[in-house]
Image 1: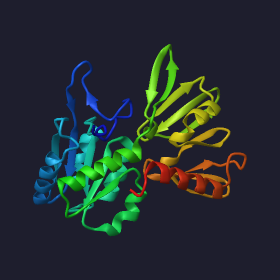
Image 2: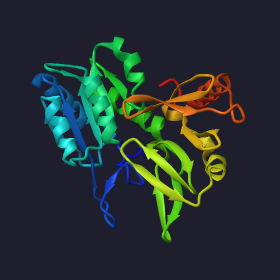
Image 3: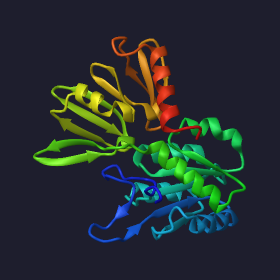
Length: 269
């Protein structure tokens, strides 16, 4: 059984685009490179990998990062986006930052330049598919990617009597203020009423939601560092400073907590 396809929309409960009541699954994939020959090679690899074998992948090709960003800006959704790092007139790293501000699509860089790995690491959960590659390489990377972002159970809450769910991987941080909790996702905010931070922290700690302050919980997937007074997280292309209380953890302790969580959840990948 293969893991679910990558790229859950912010409002979704999983990573598959499914039509309820049927077995029809559709995966929408974008690939962007100014070199048409590279797009030809990548498309053959994507369509030949086992990961999307039963998911009817639809591939949309872009030779311009601006064109891709325009499509996303008008509401076109993709499950997974493959980005070249070096393109004519475009920078794949900056393009990724723009996409992550408005979309929860999974992003995979395609390049032979492994020296960009440190920059890619700062764009978690983005990963690098190194050239030259095969469909088997891509299968392994997609499985590793799914493991990076997977949460065992979504955050569940009631809104006007209706059960709502948010994938843990979509949550960047939560803030309590004036009687409600706001969940900050990569693309939007959701207000959650009557769910104490203490309860969220207790129920979802193993999935990476860590209470760092009486009013804040961070998702360790987006952790970027610690200072004496702040936890740093990656949020919409920037490093955000979240208050850190020694009641919950010191900066050094939080670094250790993140290291332990990363080792358990992401492995070497």
